[in-house]
Amino acid sequence: MSEKQQTQVTSRIGEVVVYPDRARVTRTGTVELTEATIQLVFSELPLTLIADSVRVGGRGTARVRISGVDLRQSFFRETPAERARELEAEIEKLQDENRELEDQGRMLDARMKYLDGLREATREYARGLARGQTSVEEQARLLAFLQEGDEAVYTGRRELAVKQRVLLKQIQKLQQELKQIQSSRPRQRYEAVVDVTVSSPGSFTPTLTYMVQRAQWQPLYDVRLVENAGSRLIKLAQLA
Image 1 (cartoon, one colour):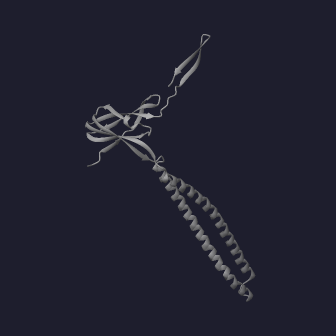
Image 2: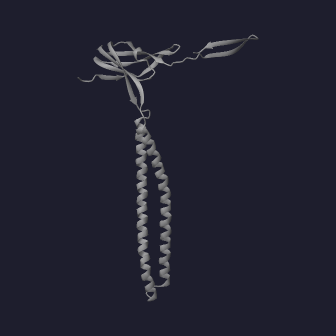
Image 3: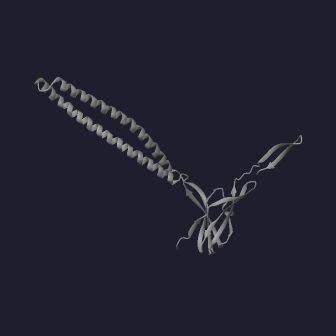
């Protein structure tokens, strides 16, 4: 048996009637329907909803027969998947930057290996100097070159270490945020699934009415002091 087509109803609260310990809530929405047997879905309903209080009605140009309503518990995550994708993209970007720094580190290692090779050659310079084949100036220039090269490599390594430390902290922070999103416990809500048969297409405004527990109401008044012809009056208006 094939599943029925589902149409999500974007609804809003149109009326609330508050009683001493509960409230009656009426939600409405508008959908366009074609001839078919479908399910209208009202999502994001509170867990304080009293299950056996749900009633469904509606009106519109479409001819609709409501055959039943099923109340289900649904799970969803508060953080949208879009944020997770943004975090993954940011992490990949920073990881690419870290790989570039690692490449620079390998280049510095190769530079130091080259300098170490030249350092081995200074022994030949010393023997050549003893035999009069090289001059003191040539050996001094080589030693100065090695010293400058060492300083450049050491400076480069220190700068890379600082950059990588900052970068890895950023990556770790983003990874922790992503992990929290992926492992966060999903929220639980009710959704009402309404079975309808449409015999004539058109627009339809479904109405979902239900009771909720632990509802409270507090009156709200607007008090104003009005001066008129030397006299003062207090105007009291009830806002809610």
